[in-house]
Image (cartoon, rainbow, N blue to C red; front, side):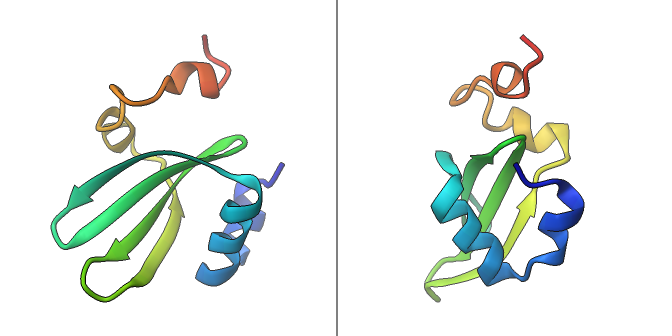
Length: 85
């Protein structure tokens, strides 16, 4: 399990590699010019932002905004994954 402080110390490539090894892809969405993927890396939800047409990861961040998580509500059980259920 990776805490938020340690995750923030990783660069984008390291974050992505960590997600590939230990994370679980949950859902995808589009936002403006980005293809955004939601992953679960215990105990965090993490988004990977790809710029469409460039085949490049722009950032990998822990999702803290509840409105962002609500956008995925029909696709994942947020309360269960966070142990709130």
